[in-house]
Amino acid sequence: MKTLHSLVALALMAVVALASAAEGLVVVKSPYSVLETMDRFEKVVKERGLTVFSRIDHAAGAAKIGKSLRATQVIIFGNPQGGTPLMECAQTVGIDLPLKALIWEDDSSQVWLGYNDPLFLAQRHGVAQCPVAEKLRQALAGLAEAAVTP
Image (cartoon, rainbow, N blue to C red; front, side, top):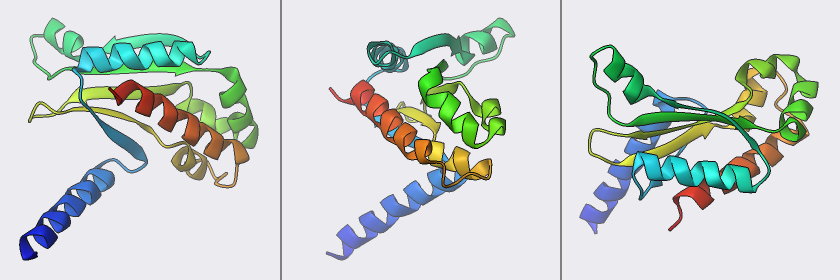
């Protein structure tokens, strides 16, 4: 029983360390490769009527200058129906829009999908009570879940 408590404590410390390393970043594990996770995420985004503006392959960029990065990609996406109401609460939120998701492989070959929590963004811009932030939070959680669920 003591071992179980120790394992739970270690797991919680790892989650807290990850959360504090990137405040406001929601991170979920993916059982797929970076490329497959990205392809799945993009497909779900498009199926739900959002626009994909760009995909950025950071590892490919690093390779162009003779550097090496583990697989790391960003997708930029959005929809005025979600972003505009958030910007009506605070126009400065526009610096954080369109939305982005980061998909990367860590040093133990685990793939992760991360995105900025809309509630954190609302708080960052002084509009923590903006009603659309929770709706965006739920929408992003649904996109991420659909992309990483087998």
